[in-house]
Figure 1: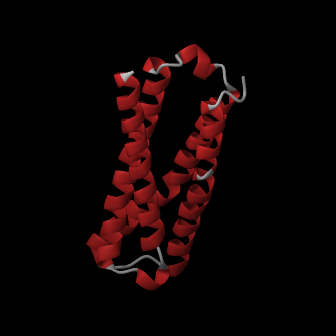
Figure 2: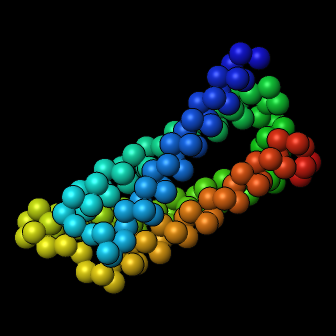
Amino acid sequence: MTLEAILAYLHITAILTLVVFLASEAALCRTEWMNARVVERLARVDMIYGIASGLVLVTGVARTWWGVKGSAWYWTNPLLHTKLALFVLIGLLSIKPTVMYARWRRELRATGALPADDQVRLARRFVMIQAHLLVLIPLAAVFLARGFGK
């Protein structure tokens, strides 16, 4: 029972970290706020967001293997696959802003140039799509935890 509680704690902490840093990206990635410090900060925030995403995945999988319900219970439930599909989709959508932030940072350091407004808006659009999809994962999670989908 202690292992289950620790796994749940680690998973929830990773989720909260992911949400905080995704929200930070959304807040920072605005044309009206873009400056050299924001470009640098976006790259760092995105790195932490990526690390948190990896920790969410690792702790979530750990819960399915070593949790009280067991892997057979989790992996045969389509709601787990729904959660994973949404998570993978969000991960794929996060690639574009990550690449953009790295390019902005390189260009800033090389030439001092800030990203164009249309590029900032595009990156923000991808971040906001991720944020809006992310809220569907806890919906699937609460139903999964209560045995729906079996």
